[in-house]
Amino acid sequence: MAEASTQTIHDVACGFCGLGCDDLTVEVEGRTVRARGDVCPEAARLLKRLDVADRPASVAGAPASFDEAAEAAQRILSEARAPLIGGLGADMAGAGALVDLAVRFGGVLDHYASEGLFRNYAAVQRTGWLASTLAEVRNRCDLLLVVGDDPSATWGRLFERFFPADPLFAGTPRKVVFIGGAPGEKAKGQLARADVLHIATTDLVAVLEALTGFTAGRIPPGASFGGVAVEALVALADGLRNAHYAVVTWNAAALADGDLVAERATALVDALNVTTRAGVFPLGGRDNIIGANQLMLWRLGYPLRTAVRGQVSVHDGSLYATDAALADADVLVWVSAFRPEPPPEFAGRIIALAHPETVFEKEPDVLIPVGTPGVDHAGTVFRMDSIVSLPLGALRVATLPSVAEAVRRIAEG
Ligand code: SF4
Picture 1 (cartoon, rainbow, N blue to C red):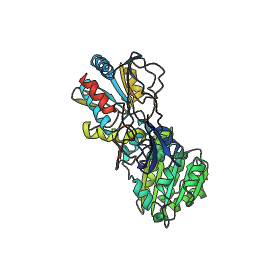
Picture 2 (tube, protein in one colour):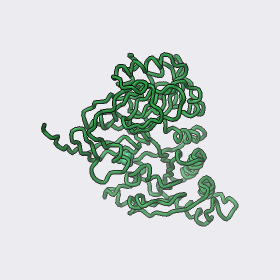
Picture 3 (cartoon, protein in one colour):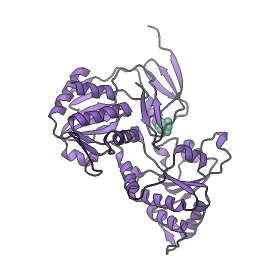
Picture 4 (spheres, protein in one colour):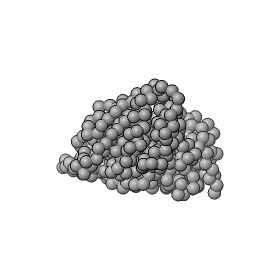
């Protein structure tokens, strides 16, 4: 048998973390896929595929055909009293099919990474915000505040994307201030041409409040805020006021008081916009959460964490969060096509449309392994700043169904 030749594919788009890099190089040899060159660890890990037989679908732990598994899933859903369609790690076609499934069988819809999104929503709903896009940060931002821990561990190429080494952007002087955690080696490397400062603090919210006060010309009493000396904060507030375009970024999902950080960061940006230009850049976007959320807004008029019953949709950010909704659910439809994310602990019945490498603590009642968008089949995902939808191509011939195909088959029964 002839050996498969290695094909090198350039400018591959990546749909995993929400940053939307579209310049990856990937080697494909038969069914083997691997990223080539200096790629971020997340993409290297999640793109990698070996030439192994597909995990079969199963019903009650016993191997089953795709059709048998789909029929079993439909039977479970037909009998379900309160399904939760969770995980929701799917491309736009998959997310659309899952909304259809909820309309047909009823159910709560939530994404497994929605906690950060809803912490940010708490701020947006109260005051609104002026959000920057990735292109605006890249083209215009001269002072970036990074609030919380260095986000490079989650978004491996974040600072490279913010401030590329491209000579086109070389003339723009950049200052980056880390408030909270210190920048790691990766961040420092990507920010080699920027002026980087670290301000350690015990209280991010207190620091943001004080900065807002100083920026607006108010002098709050005290010699330090969150353990940071007034002089340092006054100097930073001056820098923010004098910046042409300041941007504040944070990862609400990683901060216990992420809702307060989002609100105070928004207030700081509002204060700056009285005299100059500034914006927020909230981090998030893993596994197409932004796309799934957008799709629900278009289709149902509500974001994630919405229950669909009959022709009625009801949104409740607390009641319909996965953890809370599981307490009332009798069936969990767990969807994770981008990565082997296992379902949460759940005593009811589980239908899993899952990445084939998912390790389950308890064998699902129905398992349908699904292909990964951008590896096994083409698809579309949204970038974290909501304004760009990213087409993903297929890297190899699909042997597993997409989420959309699996859901359609379940609906057909
Ligand atoms: S930073 Fe994110 S989008 Fe870019 S290559 Fe890594 S996982 Fe993919």
